[in-house]
Amino acid sequence: MTEIEVDHLIIGAGFAGLCAAIKLNESGERDFVVIEKDSDVGGTWHINTYPGAECDVPSQLYSYSFALNPDWSKVYSPQQEIWDYTKRVADSSGVLDRFVLDTAAEESHWDAERQRWIVTTSAVGSGARTTYAARTLIAGSGGLSEPSLPDIEGIETFAGHTFHSARWDHDVDLAGKRVAVIGTGASAIQLVPEVAKVAGRLDVYQRTPNWIIPRNERHFSTLEKTVFRYVPGAQRAVRASVYAALEARVPAFTRFPKAMAAVEAQVKRNIAKGISDPDLRAKVTPDYRAGCKRILVSNKWYPALDRDNVELITDGIARVTSTGIVAQDGTEREIDVLIIATGFHVTDPPIAQHITGRDGHTLADVWSKTGMRAYKGTTIHGFPNLFQLVGPNTALGHSSMIFIIESQVRYVVETVRAMRRDGLGAVEPTLAAQDAWSDAVQRRMRRTVWTTGGCASWYLDQFGHNTTLWPGQTFTFRRQLSRFDPDKYDVTALSTVPSDKGTPTAKEAVSA
Ligand SMILES: Cc1cc2nc3c(=O)[nH]c(=O)nc-3n(C[C@H](O)[C@H](O)[C@H](O)COP(=O)(O)OP(=O)(O)OC[C@H]3O[C@@H](n4cnc5c(N)ncnc54)[C@H](O)[C@@H]3O)c2cc1C
Image (tube, rainbow, N blue to C red; front, side, top):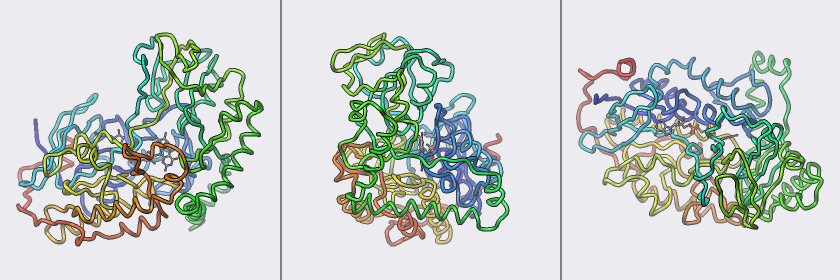
């Protein structure tokens, strides 16, 4: 197997990996490779193709600050439009020549002597098997990327079609079929209204109802798009107003959960408008504080549940048989297709099993004992020169993840610049710095609605800690990551003068 030396290896070609590639390139760091196990760029927006897949943050904000798009068709863009956007940005950025698709990062370990990450890749599809030796490893493998499957007795015995919402099987025609959807989270509330239109019968299995606010949905007019394109500053002003409106919600999540009563009243009005049956209204009304689980946005969910061909089942699932689902009350409902919409591995990211640090422990080993911890959500004690994009406590319940991603990438670029300037071969946050950061985050978490709201959510890990969300304003996060802070790091001088002689450049390696 050939070994390719690169300065930076980026895992994943979603918004995060793509942003890292573009910004490193702009800063003069051109010797990098992006490996992506999928067949195209776009991450979430290439992979999640279920019917109804859309953004739930306005697209004026859910886009890169350096690549505004005046042509968004509507306030909340559909999946295809966002995927097209990522492809356009990738195409025009001049970095695609260093992307290796159909290739997964398999095992990565830190070689202290060489001060490099040794990363072996497996071939997926037409991709090739390679080893990379990289000075930095930038993991942009996604926080909501790996489907989480429910542990239900007999699920593997179901003889009909089964697939996860994030791996939609477009070959299965749902028209007239008896379909079951397990889960009522963010993906389910988008796909159920679409499936309900074509399915003969649709059973929706709900464990806990969500608070679902109406969506201020509308298309942009030709005039608006023209203004966005040609009037300097107009689109930035709209973007800033969306940003400010979403940030204004933060105190209710983090410090004043009682303020969520206003959201609850709004949702109850939405339920009354969408659902006629009082029993069904009761089933979809949550008994915990709004915001404790992700607040969802839809105008279609409640009317979909009110349809004659749709049944909401809240008794819990006892088991799956070869022909259907048996509820806890003993009722068996036969189905042809089973759609699993139970979310993703969030607090146990699969990539962590494949990254082995300085002491020979995998990141998964370390985090299984402590929960996910990282300094500034990005760098990790014991794992020199590793940057985890969308790392611990960086996700948002209220705004655009792209803002967070850009903040983290800025920190990566600043750190790499400092390493080059100061001749550093390895940087690793001290345990004290990482603990101080993570402990402060957890202290702030105590007052939040995610902790006090009376629900169990996917934000929480095996210890009951919220290691997923950032408990504050996003501009605070950005400020904290605005510069590299060497006093919080153990730094080691470059041990060997890097020799490019005889080793292919990233560009040559990719085209080889
Ligand atoms: C259905 C859905 C809707 C969402 N809606 C919103 C929204 O409205 N607003 C919002 O802010 N966020 C939303 N999110 C979160 C969304 O994931 C982030 O906004 C953003 O797309 C994350 O980008 P990323 O690059 O970090 O991760 P991803 O987009 O998940 O990309 C990660 C990439 O890494 C690749 N990869 C993973 N492991 C490996 C490996 N071992 N080797 C090589 N490649 C690998 C994956 O194939 C993938 O392409 C949504 C997520 C989902 C699933």
